[in-house]
Length: 586
Image (cartoon, rainbow, N blue to C red):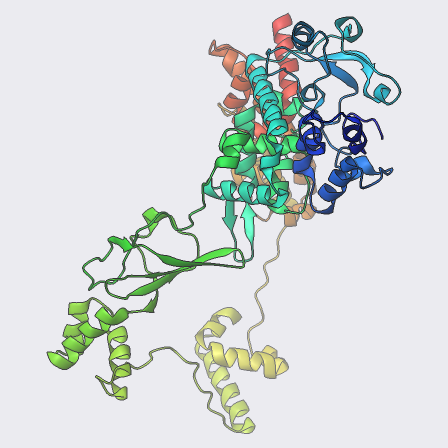
């Protein structure tokens, strides 16, 4: 038997040595006195079978057991010391005569005792020491001089809720079932809350909206304490649940997502919320001659998922009209717009027969009475033998003109003569103007006999630019533009090549001609600024603006006044706090 806080092996040896009548079984020891219920949600496939068999004593412990169990290589590392709650120790001594180490207190991420609502403390004993010694849980031995890191009230409440979730999973771990089923529940709840969309290829997670919602729900301080927070208000771990169902995120991340999606792990397991891509029944009928037109009358639809895209066929039980939708559509958007028809149904066909065959109406009056286009009426009337086939409307699509072929000699002589007449009639016209007058002949001569065309056409007009004079002109305009942008009231403007060129009226081709404007380029290189420098100027302006208006100075008020997004402003938090500190010390 191997002693271990997280993965003890060959527990059957303990059960075999217990006297009869204790009621303690091997399964009860595993589920009620080991970490297996907590570890189980992070075990997929063969890993779960291996760990359970090792606890039973059917598999020998190997070197990479902790790797297979997913206990190493995690962001949220295992505790280094045995941990305890002072109130739990005193309660155990009072109730049982001695205290014991609680498995809940040893779980990664648990900072608060959910029973007594006290911070959990580190003892003076390393976790690895239990391999060699028996360490009783007494107040004298547990005493530790390390200071406790306390959190804000909001974060403390989040830690208390997380500790309750860990206690729940230790007690009800057998209810979790297969890990694949948990992934399906995560997936279904993310669909229901709008964090999963669909592309023509596959399902797609809206990572930004999911991350934003998780950050607003938990807060930065709590996520940082759980090592579940990346820079720039972004966390990468939620995407793993939607991106790859074969991944094995740690149990702590499962619990965080459970509480976010359902309120608690218990509600998560009991939830039966389903994703309804087309809303709740009934759905509207789109047959214009049906008495239930645009009314909710269809109770059942056929839904298929093709390449991750939900598709459905709607059939009205009253008129037989069927139509389909190729993607998930909210219920409120199903009462307008066109639909893709599958079958008009028996009522529509009977109405068509009544108008054309029984009452003898013409196509035009039938179209007015039924409310459908003429082409649709004629198409189905011909198919039902109410009209002859020659009554189908002519296709008015435009086809390419057929080129009239003539001999090469006639073509060359006639084209050249025609071009010479055009040049003689417009002696002052440019090449481009002549080309627009006879484009077809212009292209033929250009590609078939360019030498003759070049010799018998006015020379191309070339405009020569005095770049030296233009450089001096642009330098004056750029200097004036920079002065205006620097002194303009309000938030500072970004001094970059394009913004200065637009203000100075230099055109949008400034990048391509700067090589010919050395004076202008030298000046612009000296005044343009990087985007981060511009953002710092905006933050400094915001601080001064708030001071002038008598408003309170804080990081949030500064970045709001600067107009910089929260994600970008997070990179300059230390810079803003330093500037605010300098102001406070003056």
